[in-house]
Image (cartoon, rainbow, N blue to C red):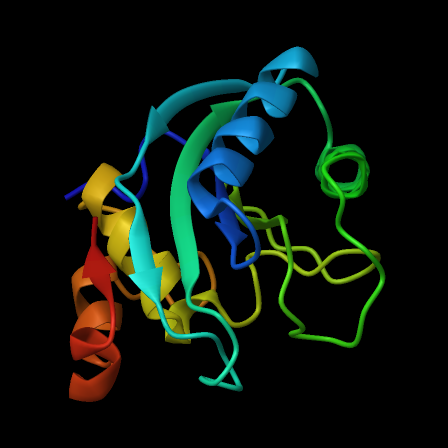
Length: 165
């Protein structure tokens, strides 16, 4: 089997405040307004807030995009969109209206200014399951493990605690 023949860019988008679905749809339309084209979009997935499950549940999707931006310009644009949609500076992992992460940028590895691929994506059910939905052949650029292996390494409670909507 060929190794990631098409180098794609994947973003994770999440929300756990307000009208979560509308927040994610607003995020998608803001990406489009900034010439970031969405090629594919997963279903919505609802999961517990991490690390504090007492916080409101998250709604997450993964999108495959096309852009001419570099990784650093893309993350800067994503942060601008988060702010425009009302995300406030709060302690790490606080509830938020909008969260956009670069999951994978064309299989590139990067460690200054931005860590690529996303450093914790391979442990997160809300990234792996939607990503699997849109690319069943995806392989982690650093770990060299395919997505099925990564999903099977999640705990059974991680698998049970997320649901496709």
